[in-house]
Image 1 (cartoon, each protein chain N blue to C red):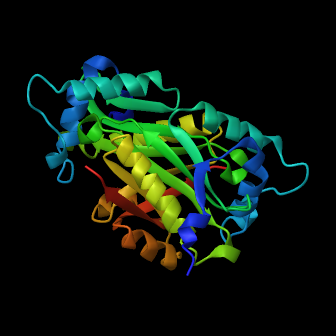
Image 2: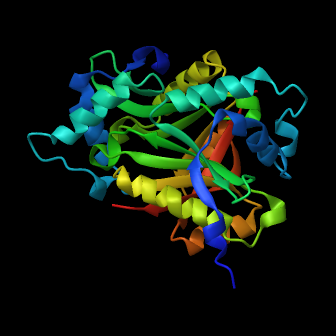
Length: 158
Length: 158
């Protein structure tokens, strides 16, 4: 049997990945109505990407297949804070895996990478929001040691 | 009857506030074991504060009484992201109100300020974690329009 992990390479996202990442973000029951896939792609996505890349505390990574296709993405934010004795914490958001490639441990490989990066930076914890209805995702994170201890509350402004 | 809100002034935290903020963070059933209140205060707190102040996407605010005492604090982080059409989102963390001054709407006043700041920056949403067991806090945020739609999951690294 092939080692599926070998097929996937985790790397920081590049500007030419933006279109595919936005497609991944939109290909989701909750994300569908939030994104604008019209062509040419809205400049707002490029502007946001440039801001992420210029910020040493923000990072988007992608999972790239051997053929160059992008199979998944996630964003990390490293947050300086006074609590926990002044330790940095890490936030993970916008995790997506291409739905045609589920079961290949792509999410697992990205999360492993993210946990390793947070450890390398000495973050004291990693936190993330999962929509109440994403039961499989909740199980996935629990299997990686995450505790389901908090409520995630949200005020929509726009 | 006095207008209690008039007594309280919301402003960015200053370096000389750090000791009081750390005391507020520690004076809490969940935060108690996380902080180090020994004197002199650990340099890690000052280092973290300097990093927050130097970062245009992080902000600690305090609620200051007319007599100069600090009655509350919270941290905001503004997160650039690709989702939501490249909109920024705001995260609120480490909200504390001095327990001897509950019922004076200090939390309300700080949250109002934070929501106004997020709107001013055109953040598309504000998100926050509340520990499962903090029922009063959950009601407080719901009363301010927050939806209790997500789970907050956490992996402790240190």
